[in-house]
Image 1 (tube, rainbow, N blue to C red):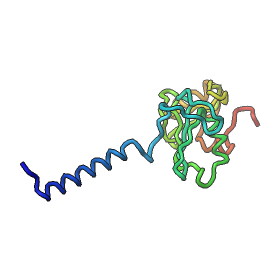
Image 2 (tube, rainbow, N blue to C red):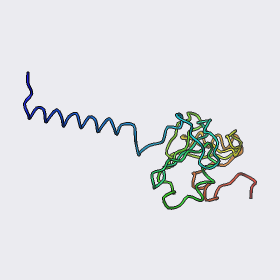
Image 3 (cartoon, helix red, strand yellow):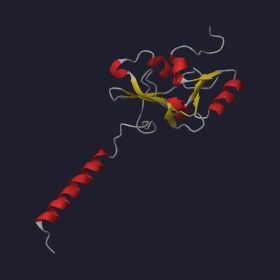
Image 4 (cartoon, one colour):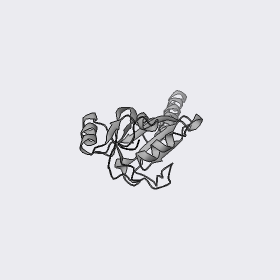
Length: 158
């Protein structure tokens, strides 16, 4: 059965639409990056992102993805990121699951956690779990921004 010009045109439009959708499929500009594939390196210290429970990531206003092997590296790096390097989105790993979550939904605890760089930071999606861990480990808990701006520090550090 031969196709008419109209049917061929419709088929061409359909095929082009599918090709465009498939071509765009693997690339996203929303949500956290996948730090489990490839060899992601910490933007602050250069170490491999080896323990996903302590990882963090940002997407800059310029569209760059930066990974961090530890929250302490992120905290230090955020203090100097401005302009196109400033974060548009920030994600922290939930310690119990290792899943990256928006930083605004997370509670950060600074205590004696065995983080990759030894800074002792961990993040929790559950505020109650964070409060319990901070109390149990004699640490402090709060929003990421409080650690970045220095409002919260390690107990006894001044």
